[in-house]
Length: 607
Image (cartoon, rainbow, N blue to C red; front, side, top):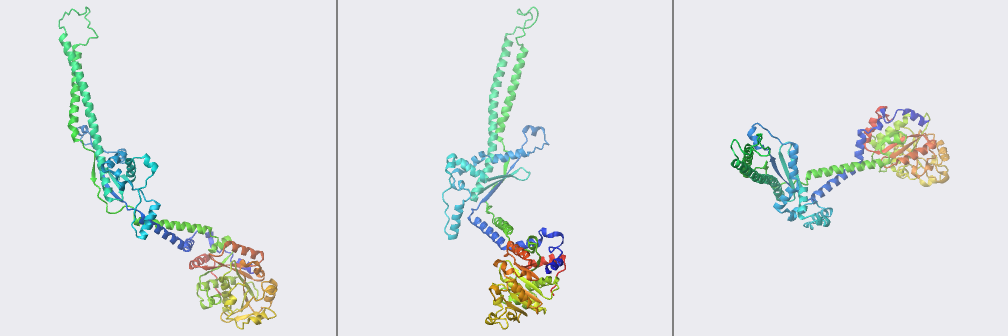
């Protein structure tokens, strides 16, 4: 009957209105981080330590920077004809210049100029391997100087590549060429452990680019001059031959009016050129020759004045500050990666955790009601098992237990006596502390209260042994009936106490013996029974149907949900009324969640 009245009193959803339990709120997030904060911070610390080891074992890299400017040049004929002409380079032309800077031709020019193929400091510029990092770390710990081993050589690759080709691969891996915004300026960056070498290679790359353009223009001019020379010779020969033919024709031509070879019809021979045609051909070849000669003269005169369309505007200087690794950024990244790893590990642990953590799990997975939450308190002391609510009435534990007692009082069975059992899925001191302090709480309100200890593994009997008035184990064992003669008073807590000293057929865990005992205890208004834990077996819970209600105590973080579900299933099969689950060992954050969750119904007040 008490269970039905309790269900009616709590008809409204204990999780609050609106079904908000399906959503993750701020308190759940804070509870998650507060639960796994140690492991998350530990992973973050591991990330920082890993980043520090990486910084300690990494070589310092310096980056030298030089800048060149590409200037569009107008052709000479456009300069002479068009004064107001603005010629611009499109993106494709700029990208072509960038591709030329990254080309193997520029790399080979720099390698040959600085003899980088035979420079060990340049060829062995790859990153450190794990073994080398461990060796360097060992030298840092022991204080011995680090001596790098021989250069790493891949035999198969060494046979296939020449020193120049390997140097070109290293050059391409450490060169970075970028356009500055939308301008015609190009930045050239080169990385090297040696800052002086990085500056030299950056400057040599810019000079090689300008020199390559000059050489290309000079080669094109030389090819043009050579072609003009060849064409002038051919045009001169053709001009001389045409002039000679015209002169010979003029010398042999008969200028008489009546020529003897003239045809009677007066028609001239069609296959014989006239003097006018020969003179026109000779004049044409002469003009062609003069034009080629003028172009040749102009090309020869302009060849010494060839100017490249790019120039260095910022030469590279020796860098003073390392560019890699970046200490602050690396440490921040290590801490962030550690935090992400810690959150991931915590989420996996939270997903795989099948222990009771929050009151929401009690309702969603067990179908029971959470009657209250008990934060940490000084229950490890013997006095805390029964006198915590008396010595510290305003402690979180006392206030939580007062709320649970008020919730129980909402459902009045109408019987002259209230019998409440306290059990748990796993053995522990908290269950006995809840039973003892609940009895003390009822006794403090002036209600005759009796506490019965049926748990053979409970510490209540041992803790109250020195406080019981008239306690004599020999006299108790010789008593004819384990009823009224076994009851002793606890003056410090205000209630009476009785331990289950009988075993076998006389044990109070048997329903018949418990029913006979309850018939002799009419003078008590409240009887609290400390039941055995479910882990010891269901035999100790056979007396639960004789009680008006059973309060289940569960410890957060240690009570498995499966064991708690088995306990609830066993109590339902035995027709034992379940008052709810009292969640113990909760932090103060849970109290805030309980207050917000309870806003949907009137908060119970302790009687």
